[in-house]
Length: 292
Image 1 (cartoon, rainbow, N blue to C red):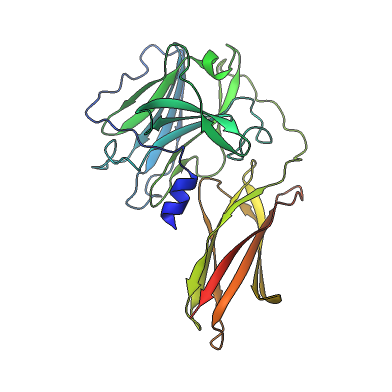
Image 2: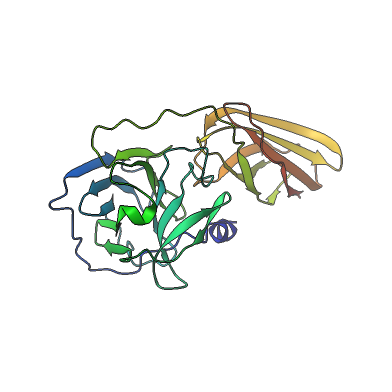
């Protein structure tokens, strides 16, 4: 299941160097340090802060708690996702981000990944390149903001994410807002007209009389969904599970538990649909549920 999830997140790839000394942001005129709670990622990579600074250029650096595999493990990357128009209802389904900065294992270099529908695809290197560094406690990307479509007076929303057995994002829900001109207020959001998207529903197995864990992946630009899970045997509806409107991190999978009746065995199926705070309804997706 985790392999399937990682393939779905194939634009997330690892930084692959160690022993580099971060250049830092000495001389930056506009630096903001966004904190993130420590200890919320288990034994996986744990982001404790995200530093955003400019000029010169744009620096986005995540600090992590010490981990011996940071900057070494090829399947545990750092991604910086940027919502260049400060609108979660446009761009990708990952909080409306238009650009993600990540290391590409196919080209062995950092690349910008551009929004392509609800997800992303790799784009060409910007003029002047995309800088990156990774040290014992920090890792980040450095780029000319104009190459991301930002003007000298632009602002943007940003989120940092790791991909591991326990994904950590900074912030835990939503995005941070940064303004290239300090003190500028972000634009007010209009009505939410974009529906959430159920990206995947994963086949499950369980034992009769035990708990079944049903796993799915739902995305919403504003990060809030109410989910409906229905379990069927053939065309017969066995159970409906309603999850109230909640924070829904698009970088993480969602799970619900269902107590399987003792007398129930065989092949079932279940569906997942989501609605956002404005009542926009998602697509419907299905997966199998095998009970022994």
